[in-house]
Length: 86
Image (cartoon, rainbow, N blue to C red; front, side, top):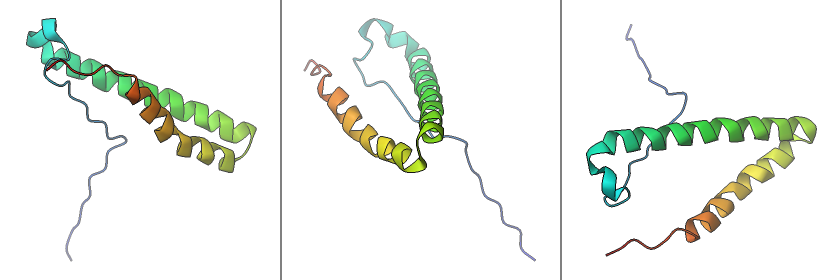
């Protein structure tokens, strides 16, 4: 019999600062990447807990509608970012 294995991660988060994001911290790219990863994982945990509370208080359908609206909120926030210097 053959053996099979699979790898799974509890979360998948990838973030890397673009060149010029931290002009005075060019030597600390690893620190900047770690901060970005930590903030994204922390915010994801808070948002998922909030969505769980919303689902418990209302219904699963309401929580799923809230999840469906998150990309629109992220897009709106992305529009507020400044243009990069060229």
